[in-house]
Length: 90
Image 1 (cartoon, one colour):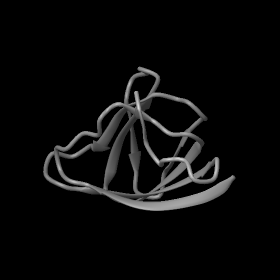
Image 2 (cartoon, one colour):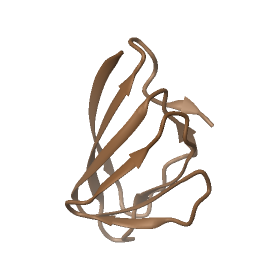
Image 3 (cartoon, rainbow, N blue to C red):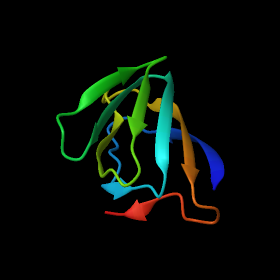
């Protein structure tokens, strides 16, 4: 297993594609507000200083900035099998 830490900046109005990760993800919003949902659940808004969690194999169905005129910046910490890709297709 290995730990991976990625800083992500999502542009205003840009949404992430539906995807999975090979390990669990713990996220922390550094700036802005993030729309977030897994497994088709209703999206929630995670504000600056807030966290989110994706269990292993969860389908990340909603992601991106919650504001049409401001980006969101967050850290994603993942623990996954060594050498695996960071993002997997849905």
